[in-house]
Length: 389
Image (cartoon, helix red, strand yellow):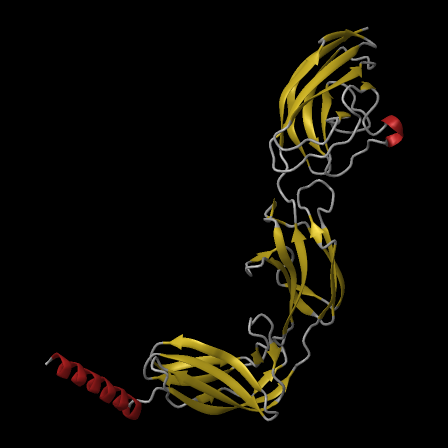
């Protein structure tokens, strides 16, 4: 009895399938609505709407066949549930590559649009209709000579290969977006987005940073995407490797300023402790610990300008309140760490300031300077120093 019941069940399923194929079509008639396409980006283009219906769930593909014999795929094996009136809006563009990022406008002419449906049992049906393209701008904006220099950067704010210089040529007026994709194809906008640009030469920079934080180390593709008014979209990519990136951080652990009372011409000693609490090595420059300034000097005036600001370098500094500033610089008295500071490393920096200003009282305080970027622990260890004369 069980065997007979199984046979009857299979027969019923086959009869139902045959009935479904014979009596209820998988794919209804295909027809189009709308005028002949004008794909010129003039603001008056109306898309052609392709109509079809499905009698049961199916994977749907849609393509164009032109007079030149080329097949242009618009949709490929997209699952759809049953429906009475599916509408596909055809704007005159297609994707020339499987990833679908680039778009091209079809050439003027007569086309046959075909809809194919394949159900869960593999049964397929196709129906077609005519589409006309009266006018079209088929000239895409091209992105030429896209170059990144260097192609390996270390986004760690140490002023060595932190930034890639990017240049490219845009052959046609277009709206431009710039982003980076990782090896998994994840996208991060890193520059302009949908920015209207004229044809011409362009230069950009990329520091491997998004929202002020370096991206993870790895290979990225700096991508320029250009879209013209007609709907042509072109994409160009250049690889950029991020290596040894990270966020530099440091903290002043102690500030000692003494003596608090000196005679004019006397010296005040400073001692500042610094710890690297970040992920990268902190590069530093002189003068080395122990250097003596007179109060009229600054880091930019000593040693024939050998120690002027250098972007990305770190130094400790002493500034003051209640006395004339020196050359208008913040933290005019600066000292290096003596060597580059590794993550987790701590160092004590010493220095001396000879007090030559005739000011009876002044507040001295310490800070940590990441030159060209920011001041860390700004204004710590305030100490009142009195000068007698």
